[in-house]
Image (cartoon, rainbow over all chains, first blue to last red; front, side):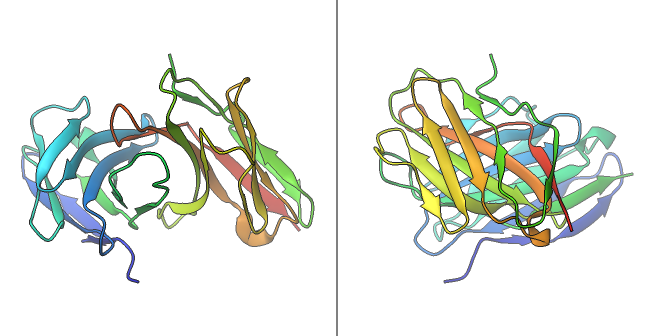
Length: 115
Length: 115
């Protein structure tokens, strides 16, 4: 079956702009979570969506938002971009979690550069 | 306190030799899962192996095995017969199934396989 698809793969934006990233999970996976990866902070959890509802949120400012559609595809949006938002953004697709649920797969990521 | 600790920023191993990457974790949730991912320079997080907190036996997947010592809260990754293509960053991660679906990641270990 198809893997997790993130688009676009690369983005260059200017400070102050906004950006929308997309993630299509593996078929049958209803949980989508987002992570930011930077050299300084490592991998940090942004938020998780399950059945179109945000179930969990990390410690990021309100400029970072997301949503999930009925087909489980998810988007994340970053408004008023700052230089520090430059990062690799990874999306993870999984079953809801719980004992025995082992599947959790990541997309190739979107590399965002803010100039 | 850090949920996941990887104390080896960089490791070198001779081709065809075995190597152990260390990981310790901290949780009070009795139901959790431990994961290892490989991240090549392309950025994609590739799932390697999973160990559930209730699993009695150590997980194995081909050349990868997980040395799970629950009392010591360690989940080391053992790669046997290293190959040049194993050179990458390796991340240990945990999900606490009773408190959410997010991953907690370690800081990673950069593995270099020497011919």
